[in-house]
Picture: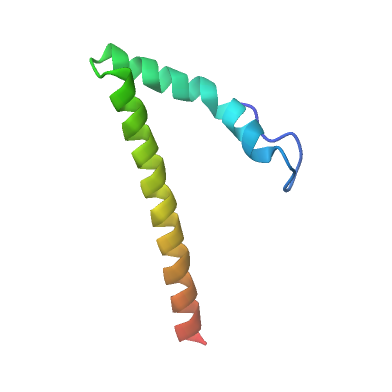
Length: 72
């Protein structure tokens, strides 16, 4: 998998990341279809997994901030 074109933030970094992970995404999608899942439900499941990871990451950041506040 290709890494970012530049170190640090830059305008198209998320787009570059999408391009980098797309082959693995398509392989996962094809593998799930080969196992008998319907493409639309696999896409829906992957989207929900992504949302769940975003919510978990955000919750962890809040918890970490609360812990840091309590330690001060």
